[in-house]
Image 1 (tube, rainbow, N blue to C red):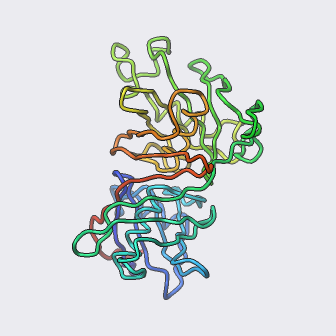
Image 2 (cartoon, rainbow, N blue to C red):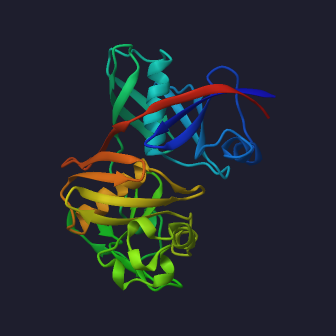
Length: 303
């Protein structure tokens, strides 16, 4: 069959969009893998099928590049909002829409340019899930008052030594590790042992190792981060995908973890390889993420 598609990205985290609002579109994991392949297919971190939704402006059906379903994707949902706005599926002058995801509804406020095309969106990402069993993870937790039990900076051993993770779910599980002393880590963790740091970390190896660790029964997204004068810098190894240039839910989870561990205030700029997101963990408990979304190109492909 011939598939019509459009390509979008949020800070370089890229997605193939397929319109499923009319004819039903069902893809096998093998077809998704082919579409996302950067050599033989279109190339993307995942596929988003746009579907209708009762009580919302649309449903975002997100599939990782390995064919597995994801409950939520922060960069993807901003791109989803842009797809709805730019295709006239919502009123561009309203400045608001409601996206349905497997993680539940996500209210979104957006700005448009002079042509009515969406440029920036602020997504209400919901309250972070901190209870270890609900993340889910098997790490021990400690009581943090009204926040309940949180698995905060719990050490997990690895072939390169232990790393301390804070477990946060933003509708999908995240394990966030802040590194305060890069020089203390094993030389083999870096592409250049003389320039130890976030940029030279072999995240494709250590991230993959922790993604499938037994402490995370549904696997996990893995973030390594550091605090800077400008905010927080992070890299992410996404569950079912590998390292991406950006991860919206990962930025939210990292901001929450930074606040929980006393490394940042409730509003912080999180810088990723593809750019920066403004994250605020409001006093109402809701995490809000603000960032851009961009259209790249459209076309057809034979499946």
